[in-house]
Length: 559
Image (cartoon, rainbow, N blue to C red; front, side):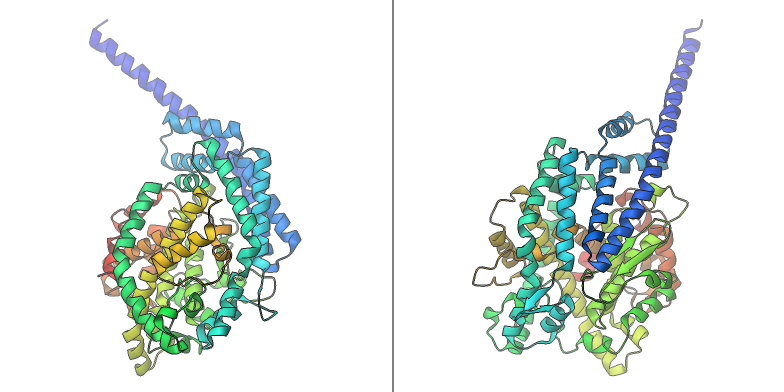
């Protein structure tokens, strides 16, 4: 036989063998996914409903139900034989179908983070649920009287008496001392689970399993530190002069309770125009509902399923949840008619529309955001509007004098807020990284060292306890906070891309975001519908024309 002909037949046989193997692997994987989703979907639904019930009632039995469903899901993903098979398929590189390969990636990371011994897994889930329940149902005390988070924020926003402000601030921190011991133990258990998987601690495992890189995050946060240090110091010095005058103290004597937010993560509304004064005349729920409808992303069904107002036993914070990946999306808030809650409901509904408008023809495993920071970016994109003077003029029909004042200070508030948040994110990222690196270290002093370094806030003179543990993200969203800052970067990149694709929106969107369906069309098509069919950076590149790039945040707020 001709040598060339023989070689050709060998190539054909080899390719046939490869293609046959690919088809076999893909067929096996499809069946595995079908079986896994058949198990997972009802568990995830029951877990989401149990969490919702627990968050809205605060009852012990509801938290126990949530605990049980969380454990079942984690046990499903902890199956070592299943993980070995998933790993084998992934390493084979024989899965060529795009949607199938993406589901395989997500299954790999979900199994990896749950490869935990059964007894250790039970301990982690039980302790996690216990801490969440304690946190969500705890109410601090002032002079022997229980106060809600809403009470604390009102006092820290308006009260002029430093003694009362201090009492409110301390009440916001009391939960930290209650849960700190359990939280440190939970960190140790998580580290115990991570080390057999080849990770130095759970923080590294969590970031890696989230398709991110610790060294790259370190680089990003170092850049943010360098870029924001000087403008933050300048803006805070001006703020300190205003606060010192308000409270009758020297600027150098200002303490954490003088900054209006228990963690100083939001800008005090102390300039010559107070945005709260405007929002108190309106119903922030109605404003949000009207706005989203106007851009072609109606949320009336979401709000009808939601729990929006404060009461005893209810989770005092805010979140959005996708109950079933089929359209049952809800938010939890504790609304007041002020700028903070205007921003919050816009933010949470941003999460909600991301989930609501996934392409429901996608496989179940892909009906979720491309990454947690991608949904944060969308939420922040919308949340920023609460300080946008042109948005306020269109939505609130501001009188000319109020609009002129809002224009003057709105941009200043927004810029300060973004720079302030970057400094706050530096505290959270570096502290949590060290928390998992050394949970037996002096965490209380470490916390205040970081607060002073990055936020330029004086620590209390006396022993201050586990103030750090009062930040609920350490409990309910471990090793997550850096995603908020990445979300801010994505929000700025989104804003630039939307304006570039719809030039009539003009500079930064501003007033023409209101009532313009181009905003909703862009987000629904480019960001929401794809779900997680693409890795996060591929989704961002497809939506905006380039991978995640901090330059848009820098151009918007630092130049």
